[in-house]
Image 1: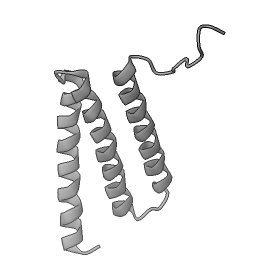
Image 2 (image 1 turned 90 degrees about the vertical axis):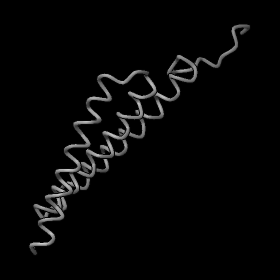
Image 3 (image 1 turned 120 degrees about the vertical axis):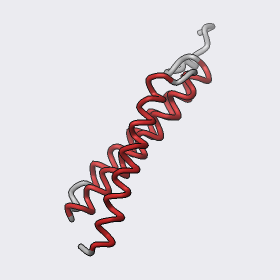
Image 4 (image 1 turned 180 degrees about the horizontal axis):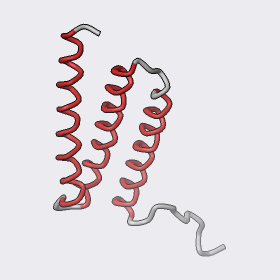
Length: 99
């Protein structure tokens, strides 16, 4: 790799690492549950970016399924938490009680 690309990858890795530390703090301390959920979603995105930087550095394509898996899990967890915050229940029982 060229020197410029190495510098960009190193700088990106440092920025991603600092972002992960800040998001970890927000997940643990967050003043409301909403803040914690947004930080958890952002943590998943930053984790995918960090893995992508690692894949570029190692020149490997085997990390792509891991990135896709993390993205899918982050999406599903965000939808689940949003539904929980909206209705205070994850699985709805839509059946009428008259039946």
